[in-house]
Image (cartoon, rainbow, N blue to C red; front, top):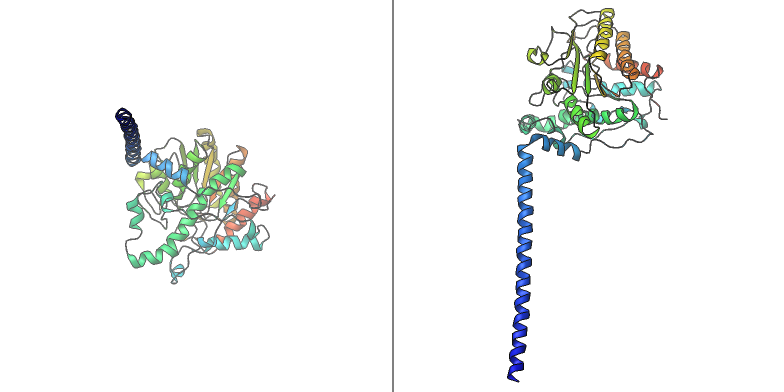
Length: 374
């Protein structure tokens, strides 16, 4: 009886010891697993912090700015949130801060566009903007609590919506051949500095998103705003995937001589340049560009501040000259089967909206774009 009790006790002890050892073994394994996971996470965070390109890649891949656009929509991007109007400032500043909405109203009233067929973009988030900009720069836009509260809703928000439109336009252009953002073209803003009514570097952002999400390997920027596009030149000028054709007045803002060194093809048009001379220079420039670079995407910055009478552009291009200019660029891309993104950029007169609308209508009549859903 005693032997049986001893054997039973020993068996129970052995079983308990085995269970204990098993739990200990499992606990050690779990601890090691969790330690490795934590270490991997820490190393991943460290890697992201020390490798900006990895962080940029993650932000682009996680962005919601690219979304599928139904065929019931055309490749024209706009939001009523683009327009800026508060405290009467739009009457004091030479920039027509409601031109974007007026362009669309003209297109709708002229029967070339239906409101329901316009694509509305998403607002670029802080994370989206960090693809190019630093946190220090973005925080600098909110230096005063009161000013920031006004600017955030009345200026920065419309700009972020326009940035979203520019980025989305590249996706839409690769799918349908072309896209027009009735806004954007903030070509004076760099990753670290704003200027010239440009708070965010939408052209630089558009290119980076296209490189990764659309697997585009070569981008041509055709900047035909009256002012030098020193923003994208500073950000992208040393990137051999980017070719910059900039046709600008060297006698006006921004006088950025450092950025001019990054222009692949510089065409200077001085104050007083007429329509005939301007279009001749453009023809020559496009011919040279077609020989020098074979892009997979064209980003066309179509500023209308080249118009005769614009107080800041100082050129003498007629409204019909604007129409011819835009048609030439669209034909350049169409003949080579290159997707094209058009941005409206600068334009400082009340007449600019009508001129832009007339040009888009001409593109439609020429069969270069389609403003009615299929």
